[in-house]
Image 1 (cartoon, rainbow, N blue to C red):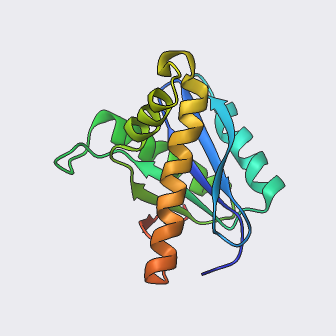
Image 2: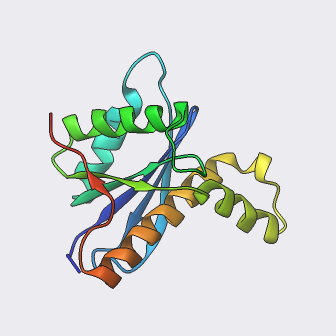
Length: 153
């Protein structure tokens, strides 16, 4: 297992959930919810600031395919954000299938007796935690980073 902090990034239309790992890559924890700037790129700048602050070695961005594994408008949106991040951060950016991460996070909130609709920002972070923890577990199991690394432009 490579040593270093990794970020999980759950891209949504209004918000982007960010999770981070410990330096040993054992545990993912919520970090921040970044508001999307649909007119500009302040969300990208904020994520880049966090990447620098935490000295991140890799970003894992959720790749929201539909249940048949096909691309959707959300897929294209997430890939666009991932490509924009790959262009401005030094760390590699990987896409990882994220089917059901937000659903899983919302179920956890309901199981805890909380209303998902009142906890959207926290759910965005929780979805990023589910995504990142999956990536950490896969890397530990297979001894290689999961997902698809985006090329630097």
